[in-house]
Length: 580
Image 1 (cartoon, rainbow, N blue to C red):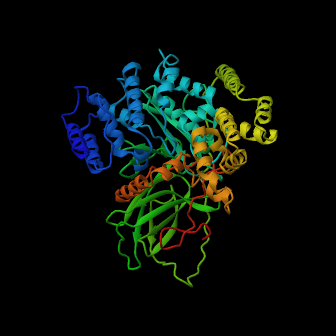
Image 2: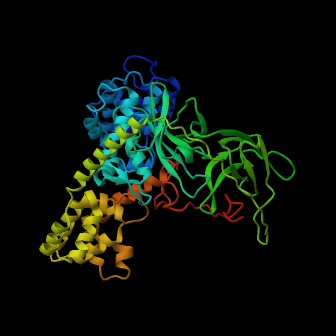
Image 3: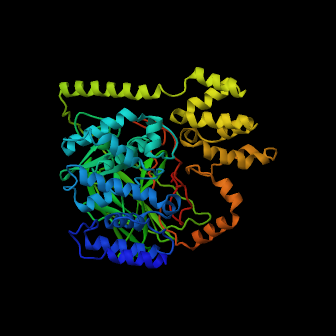
């Protein structure tokens, strides 16, 4: 029945394009959506009842390209609320009818931006922002939204898990990956196409960064998220970006635009935007074997030297003639090529080499030893232009100070130290321990206070503190009391077992959002087994690539967190060691 429903709905997308209130207007896009939905029909959920044709098409578009985990983790109602909010913004914002349909579908409608936890923030963001951007041009609206974002959030380094936009607002802080995700969500909430831009690694310093591009009246503009400047196309990273070798963005779905596509997956399109910031050059790479024959479909990694390794900034597959092209900033990369058995590598100097030939002359076998000296040169510094008058700078600085005061007034509403001490005395806990977790929990303080109170009433305060100690600081800042209670109640019976705190009580597996899985697994073992069986039956698909920003508190605007890339590999299998 479900398969039939989705087949009918997908076929409906093939109705002649244009007019008639259709959401997906391009015939090729409609065919792509139809094919993906049909291929996934066995495990997609049923759509909510009573929705409009445009809402159906919006949900179809999202379900056609979202990763399997998003289908499992979030309900159709969450996606429907976001679709409705997007359609409302398109109808009510003055630029709604001027945004091209393909930009609306790929840069306004999608909920997911990077690897953040999803929520319905678009609804609340629209309610707060619609009057602030009323009557403004698109460019001025972009600036105004960024000022609103600065009222809510300021930069602070943290770990690599990306909070939802609502959680970032609640905590009034985020690393640049979170700030940019939040700002993109805010812009999309008012119908402005927006995307997150990353440099996966700078070429001249051990760091990386994320910021935002927004579209207005036919042009993409850049700016620092939650860091408003008086004008667009300006940010603290102007200088570093002119030395960038790769700046890219990931676009939801099968996007066909007029920008260079680095790679295309079933779920997203990777776009090269380096030319928006720095001088670039294009090189052709030819992969050959030791006989001089072309190696079709060879895998290539383009590595930027950073953090004492050659980080794989781009991965490409050569064509049937063993050839691939790459556009990058005017510096050096290491290009690694393999056919799965043999491998080879060479330095590529963009702007000084138009072509590069790599011979697969190594296998990485036992006893094979070699050393290669590389002189890796980053792009040269470029000049930045000051387009701001002293009057504009003064006015903007005044606004920033006012926005700081708004944010600080909100922070002042959190539980103060005296109240945390009073809570500790009430529940019979150590005052220092209570204040420690309350202060770290920031905007989530009420949930943590309630969790401690409930645990004390149940005689489980010692295990509750162990749980709060073993999770991450970010977990304290966005985990609801019900989730913490699920893990406390599900584990407390094993408190005397060896390694209880670290490996039984601890709910964290990787960098996922914590969820209340213990009660469900204990009460419905058959249902869990069924879910696992269905998951195994689903063909693996690539997840959205996560550009975890803020690796270290390094030179320009770093932070901490973000897992170290697994790129010290066994030579012939897939990659190379950072210490060649």
